[in-house]
Image (tube, rainbow, N blue to C red):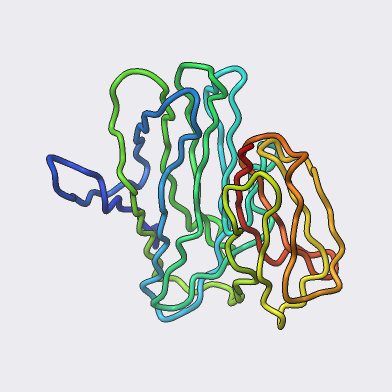
Length: 243
């Protein structure tokens, strides 16, 4: 018996909000082929008193040729990563809302299907999933800032998640972006990746309070800045470049 379930809490229906069980179901999100389509905010709730350690797996179905997709589980992963290497802890009676799914049609019309599976690292059979049809034409169940509750009653492995920097500013930017760092985390390196998962910038740090990244030579688009300490990724932030 599964100990977790999904429910979608913020679907806009006739001017109001309604909740429904989403476990094992498929939703459709309609967007423009020239823009990135995203799931919205996903909130993972832990209704137990124990900490639960979770990973996320992406499973691709039919994909539109030329499109790209990626997901973020605090740290953001490019198209080449299907299972988050790092687990995130949802503390007892707490929640984590750092998951996002993103789809870039890259001007290609059609529909791509992607499933997202949340699973307990202490018991991989304890898992739930939902599927998203990302559509660039037609009519579907367009969502307005969906919240997904994943409720756990089983105990997991305790880990800690710490915010290591401020959001990027200014964002978007044409010249540079800055991050204020949490000094106690002692981030010693930053790596910037584009939406294809390609590393486009690296900087070693000696100042543990702030980092400034030049973006004037980067193409317009969305980028992810990973923060590392001793070679391990400890956090990530997203920013946009617009010239």
